[in-house]
Length: 93
Image (tube, rainbow, N blue to C red):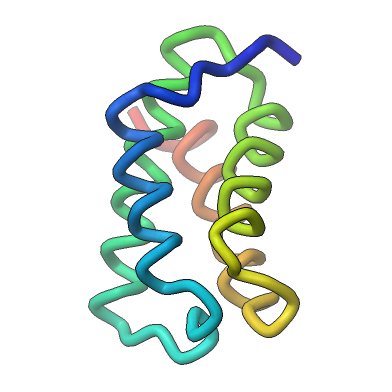
């Protein structure tokens, strides 16, 4: 895995979004989930363009979510994040 810079703008915005959800991520509204998805997809596009493999991107984003306090209570959100990553990496043009 390459050393993914943590100061990329899309990463910063996603990190802030995860922090804002924190430990209530399991209660996220549809609007909040849409915002998370948009930011996840932006990070995937940026990191894919930088040559990152999907596995590295997923690990980076999951770690960021966990560091922001999104834990086991938000398994469904974390599962969605993985799905969004893979879809954006392989199916978005």
